[in-house]
Length: 163
Image (tube, rainbow, N blue to C red; front, side, top):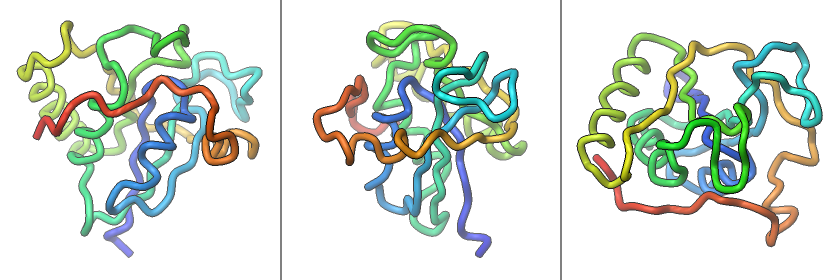
């Protein structure tokens, strides 16, 4: 079971991120939730400092943390501080929640690659924060865009691979 791993990222509204990641090769499961904030058991109505993020469970034999980050940087704007589309505030920040030194190194390398590509018109502002408790969001937010196919999202694939 050591091939099954988890990654934790935030890049704006969690509905759109989850919807795009769920069908990627090697992705076993996705769950939306809150991370990196100040209270325990955050909710959609009260999650101070928490980012709306996703927990990605993946098969490391089929995809890698590097590939997950490559896609992450293609589906949201990592150059805006605390904003994605019309959504504003720290809940919508671009963050990679780092679980170990290997993830730290990979994240730094991928950010450097994305910055050097000059595809975005400004530098990457994605923060690297230490992994903390991931709090799953309420059931009505899980798989939201499958339940509401015309629901709001500001996420879409903007570029071909950076790698």
